[in-house]
Length: 72
Figure 1 (cartoon, rainbow, N blue to C red):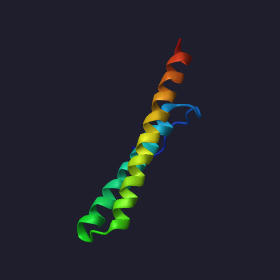
Figure 2 (cartoon, rainbow, N blue to C red; figure 1 turned 90 degrees about the vertical axis):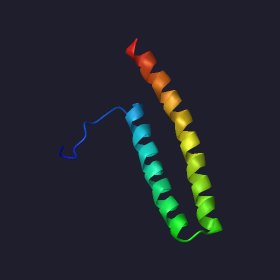
Figure 3 (cartoon, one colour; figure 1 turned 120 degrees about the vertical axis):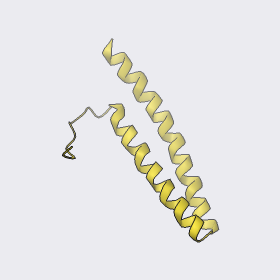
Figure 4 (cartoon, helix red, strand yellow; figure 1 turned 45 degrees about the vertical axis):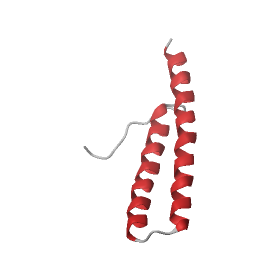
């Protein structure tokens, strides 16, 4: 795979899925950091990323519904 991705519409769920993946990767990195050096500020960052994921879930639901309407 070349790393090139096909262009997509702005309202395409792929944008949200990519954001979810980036946040998930941040959570993994924060987990590793917290395991090495447990600190309250890292826990706060983890909580913030979880909040971000919840927001992305809502965004994904919206985009899925919008995409489904566009296919009809």
